[in-house]
Length: 148
Length: 402
View 1 (spheres, rainbow over the protein chains, first blue to last red):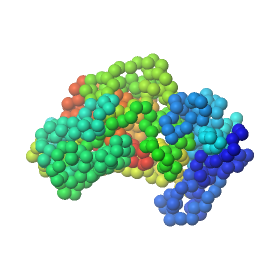
View 2: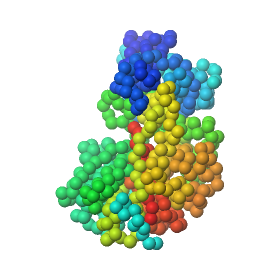
View 3: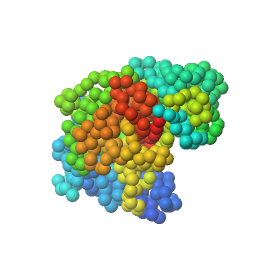
View 4: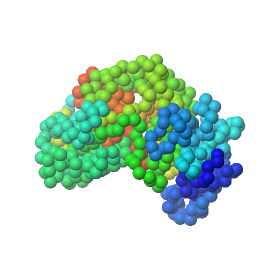
């Protein structure tokens, strides 16, 4: 990719570290629960009155909870990254340490036939779409080849 | 059958129901709502001026009149000074609007309320309203993930296959059943039998769900006249009682990924509740009504996809987790079976007209309990439940008895 500028497709949801990216969540300093994205205004645990939510990097690997694909072009505001729509897979991934399941596109070239519930995946950054000289970057899941 | 009034002052009664047929008519949603309202008033045997409270279920796709649906329908029927309210709870809007009407009646503030929902829908996938809204998760899930509604239905379907060994054939059979149920329903959009092979030959949309297994978006309207027990006693002898309405929200942490979220709640600090959100929806109705799933004659559940109907069998307590496929394949949920599910034909035959759909479920159960469901009647039906879930944590269940 030779584009001039890389920008996150959404601010503050992941680190722009292309070697070891991480999703950014919140951890409650009082009860220890997590949120993703980091958009909570107070601890979402009804039994906790904590308000100090620390921004933390979430686990970079998880296991596939479920998966599907998008055979048809999604409607706007989705932007097709190339000339025409190519089906892509979507996975919901369980992060054991945080007790969260987080959605994400699966990297291009991996189809639903390559996925199974329980497979290990890791977080990567990839192109969501390119607009002029600007590449909009998003997190995606990539299978590691291991299963839980 | 003699009407049982023993619930006395805590009872509200379905005095009348009416619908505008579902379709892709492309006309103003108000027309469908007015049609349904007049049908419901005629069915109730009362006049528009008898209505003291109009409770509208909103549509967010039809401009300002859709956000103030109660007033929009009241004005279209002719201002009478009746009180109005408008509710939005996504797919659960109709149940929320019914609950507003019921509580007003139970509070003694009125005797007769009209609940109306109607929608006109665009073609194709439901998409968010236009304009950049990076703080709105519903906008962001399309932008960042390309995640449509079927994406979420498919995640649940695949999970079901993995956990319980469901197959594509099981899913196809749900569609075949519902298509057969809806054949004689005059309000259904699709009155066409389909075979397993036809379902399995339809294009894959979101693996493992195919085009014929995902509900379409439709135009339609539905209305219900609710009345106090006292008023109903003077106007009808064939009363269907509202024994419960459940509009519960989830209990933290909700660990099932829900449309339109990016992530579940975290179970790091507190374990998931014993009963999932979907299970808690009819739990709330059963507890209020003092009945259980074993008492049901029928159920109308939200089959946004064929596979989701199987999840509902378990969530509303018709069987234990993992047994839904057997229930389906034994014919228990087909008309003539132990507890028919979606005798109307369900969303498979209607498509979804969001604010009207939960009200349409109540129309169908009412017709079933009165023995008026021509061509799709569940014989001897006495207790029926609806189950549905709206985006952003809205439970929706109405339990009716005769």
